[in-house]
Amino acid sequence: MEPFGTLRCPLIMRSRVRHSSSVAVRILLMAATGASLAIAGCAGRAHRATTPGEPTATEDLPGLRIRSGEGAESVYSDEDLFAAARQHAREGRCPEAIATYERLVTEFSGSRLAPASLYNAALCHMREDSPRSAAAQYQRLVRDYPTSSDVRAARFQLGLLYERLGEWAALVQVADELLREPDLSVDDRVEALARRAQGLFGAGERQRAVSQAHETLNYVRTRPAGSEVRGFYFVAAANFVLAENERIAFDESPVPPGTLQTQRAALDMRAAHLLEAQRLYFDTMRWSEPYWTSAAGYQIGSLYDRFFQSIVTAPVPPASEPLTQEERADYEQTYRDALAQYVEPLLRHSIRYWELTLQMIERTGVDTEWRARIEADLARVRQQLGALLGS
Image 1 (cartoon, helix red, strand yellow):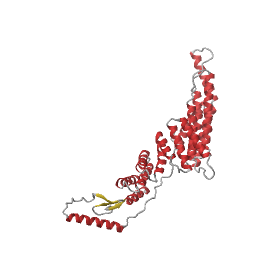
Image 2: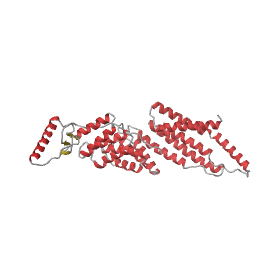
Image 3: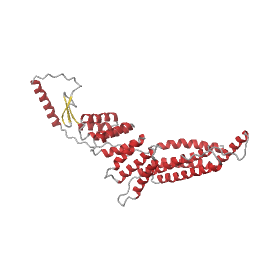
Image 4: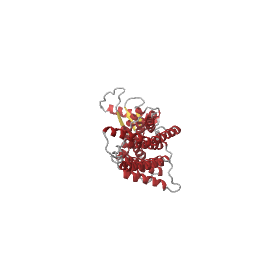
């Protein structure tokens, strides 16, 4: 199954910094440092010369680091590093921003800005299309700062990343952690429920995934007035899980060798799964979420395409009477030609659904990975239909 999700929210750096270190405070601290060095010198303690540009550092006060020597970094705080990292990020220099956030967490691990630094560094990794690195930063935040107000948002972002990376057990675990929180908003609870369904489905626990998807949709339907769901992206995602389960049931119903009656029964079963999957994909489309609508449109067209392929490649039923080798070849070719003409409408259904889905993508302007898949399969099926019709 194709990955389900897109970015949960825009990659916006959080503005949480309050600058409190005034110039006067810095001057006083530098003067105090100089006085302490002079006193140590009077006591006869030897001092190693400091190489310019390579100052040694000591953390004399919480949230403040003092270096020997002079210059802009002779005295700096966690807030200075946080502001510098945010500036790098705003200017599109994510590697520099990540390095500065990491420096803050390393040098000021107890700072109130350390959790936000890990969160923002993860956002930068996401911008750089490094989902594993982003996940590692969110995991550090959750593990090392469990009381931070950023933990919940980090867990939601981990849900997105685990889905993208196909780490299904981890996705179920983080969804469970979120669902244990008593004060989730309605929309956040829907997201956690749908993520859990996705994780179970990806892990191959299809029946549990179906139950979880139904629970998600039932939760949406039973919201009282004033507590309705406002966003439908994850409602559509839960619906898509149900449709995907039926699609797999379709794929698990091959057309076996045997008599015409045996194959007809198998084809009837396959057709029933196709129609049910199509209904559930249409239900997904009704939530009007462009990503899931394009995914559902692709899968409907793909079902008709695969149904056609399974028919034309099915083992030829045995003839009603013994045939010579030449007669057998003619019998099989006649059977295939007649069957291909009979199932031609299936290919036309594929083409039609894919064309409509491409029109929707053009109209909404929301481009997804489904577009490339539709265009590739559409070209193939059009060529196949042309060959079938001799054009």
